[in-house]
Image 1 (spheres, one colour):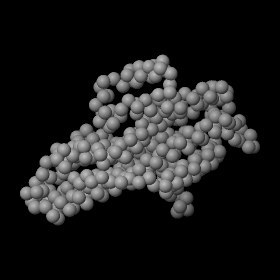
Image 2 (cartoon, rainbow, N blue to C red):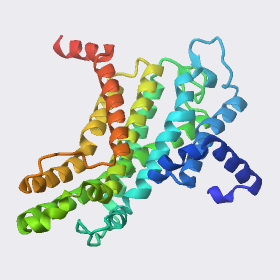
Image 3 (cartoon, rainbow, N blue to C red):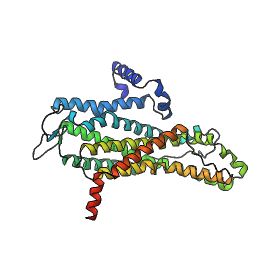
Image 4 (cartoon, helix red, strand yellow):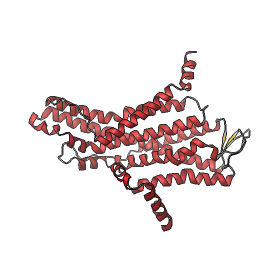
Length: 347
């Protein structure tokens, strides 16, 4: 899709990318695998989500603010504008970064394991029709539920027809629904792809368990080299922190939606809590599992300095994301919605 743009448009986009992302960002972007196409994906996401819908709303007459309390025009939809300009494009970059790396994880681990510390026998990833069907069904049912929620919002939005007994969607509204279906499809795909992350961690952990049971202390001495272990596990550690970053942006996205429309019920708060728990704990289980087995080897060698097995910058970034997610979790749990939910349950 990117290569079909006219040369002039591609040069203009390239200049914008170079201006927005100077050399100071080169190391972290490359460390995460954020190549030029991923950076371009951000700008194309802004184009599809913000600019196309904004221009369309302008032609439909729903762009400029009005004084009607029953409607919310495009420029009045502040939280959505923030989502379209920053939050959703950023989480799409993390989506593409994760999907681009998860299916090459075995090769990346083998390449980073300079001394063949782990078992890197080829793993067959067969296409799973059932997974594809599940992803499609989740996307369809999620979109239907979302449309139902939108139809019961207190305001008539810029992508809907004007207030009437039968409020419906304009042509722009159907584009809006299609965009949200695609977003749900991509998120569902990433969710299913995490099984690969867990299965890889299980395989590496099983190899460590075998090493512990069958190797002599002299053979196990190589596991004292923390720097080599960190480098060998770097591809998996990066995927975990990308997952955390994606969860953070999804939580912010839903938090903004909740702020935008206060009467959407408990499901958004519950979803944010579940997302935060996955980001803080569940998606870290693969790393915990491998690290546990490394610690068992260290214990056998009487090496009791149980240090973290991530690169310092990965450790720092992951910790920062955890702190933010915990803050969001506390904010939601102490909110009025949960107080009302508890009151409804026990009343």
